[in-house]
Image 1 (cartoon, rainbow over the protein chains, first blue to last red):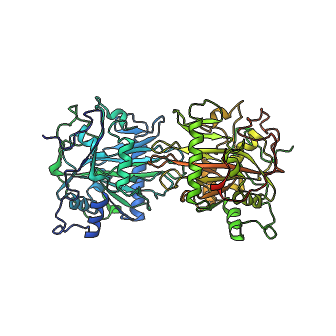
Image 2 (cartoon, each protein chain N blue to C red):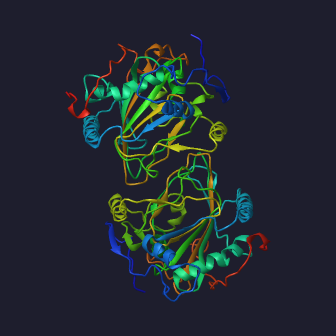
Image 3 (cartoon, one colour):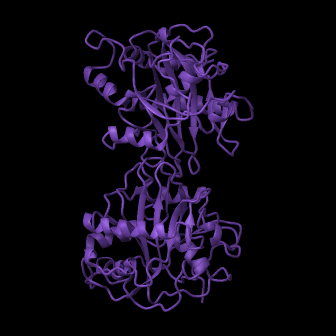
Length: 309
Length: 309
């Protein structure tokens, strides 16, 4: 398969134009939940933020499930449980959308799935899921990156036809390390220098060293955005959709307010993972789903009445 | 001399009420530049931000002088030149207000001095000065602290009768690690655990470990503020005055936008430094002025016509 977005193949950074559409459905014909204004915003900026898509009651239940999952994994040493650098505190638990869990049902909720389907113009499946916790006082920064760069090189995702969905379970303020996004950055692919080592994910999930843009490229992308850096702030229950290639990152969090969210990556069913373009072994299933991939049948309904096992 | 604010004397954190007034002049009689509304805001919140007190032309000159001072100190290894942790990049140069320098003249500028005099109800002198540079992409966080705690314990500043003045030379946005302040925190003194080692300043200027509030106290202070954490954002040329005991800190800066500022600490001439309350040797002159301390005679005029040597 032709590599449309070569990266980590030389010593240089190169910025090339995106080769895929941003919105894959024909917006004049699509009948999804998003209106023209929302589609235009997403196409232009590479993200969409919905304030309080979930009610306080629903958020409470999600938080309880998140806390339970965190606790259940507290003393488990495993690749899919990511600790803060230099600490024993859990930052993320991966692969939360399987085994009939609460989060599996949530990932199929039609409020989320129908938006993903409309943006991607296709049926979708979950390529990756996780719950994230960023503690107050000492939450570490996460440097700028495009998720697609890693998913393409290390997982073999062929095209830019995926969207990340983050359900924020805590109020996100300007001062507790909210996700920052460079609007419009999804229209460019930053081909990064370096070569991917074997099992790179073991260190990159704590601190990404490869596939990060150099200062000059970052400056260029921000300049294209007219100097804008947007932040995904809003009350708990808000939902952020961002394009798989949108450059994003977050500063540390010294405020007393922790942040947590549920994170699903929806991928088009016709954009399934191939062999990694790095030529290396694929990353494990918990980071990049390949097994039994089936399109999601959206489930309607109230999260508070959702079956949990 | 009685220690009004004991700290670093035991294993516990204790929050005690401030014993000094916040505004030391009689506001009904004072005829300084600040009006009643501004004085009330400072008394209540512990800081005052003036947007664009200096013109773009003045800022350009200050930036040139700052860059020149940074460059002149680039290869100088000295205690008064502070590097970023784990890097050779300069973060701060101290004691910039002496030897007839540009910054000495700036520190005497009446636009600044008359505000300090009005707040402190007295003639003032510079207790400490520095220029700060926080690089883009990799600017490190600075954790919450009250300057007064250190100045009291390590320098022997007896009372809370000093004010810090920060002239920002770069636009400060929400996303390039602006100074954050806890409004109202200046009304409480957080007595911290631990004991000050000899020459603590040699490490604390890079990363402060002692005299920082514990999580519970920080949470309490933010709760007193009704959950507010304010940020000193604004265009270059803005000036922030903040009370010596106001709890402040800043997150890291991964944006491409660096931050720089000029920093003067005005102290009341009747609040001169005594023996440090830690019982240790005083910190060096470049951090805490004791020699030839004289009240400033304010100088009027245009920064752009200021004599530089």
